[in-house]
Length: 204
Image 1 (tube, rainbow, N blue to C red):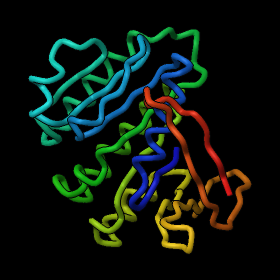
Image 2: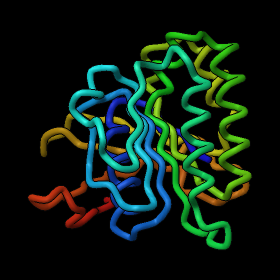
Image 3: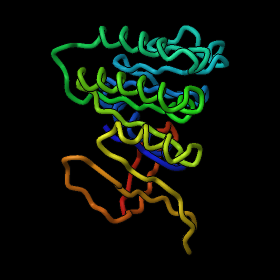
């Protein structure tokens, strides 16, 4: 389980989901952004926590629209229903991207958010899912942020920096429990084709 922090997490969470969609692998994406919707595979689930999305996406398969993140139990119920549809004999390459942590933390504060997320991560891990979550550290106090970060095995800092070549996107692994990793910051570039499919990626 890993968490992404800072401003370019959308680029990386898109890559994470698109890789899974291209391979038709079990994938769960939880977001508050009604505009953040891509092609669905038969083994994917998207949960949009935004009441404005209901009229736009109503009736689409493998898509659940909720009024918001006020009732976290609704998310748990939607996940439980989806998990029951998966082939129990195929436990490989299961992915989850959780893109609502900042909203949840602002709405429910640290104690409730940590309790809910802890149970959610245990359930996903028990079902052999690899979890990528995203959070914006600038929206939270250091204490509240640490209450969330400490639940994850890894932390990747993603940021943008100005250089003579323009804005440069970078990654740095802050922690990765039980694994060797490069401690230096690296640059990253990704290219998508007109259908929003991954056309290439570079690590500098």
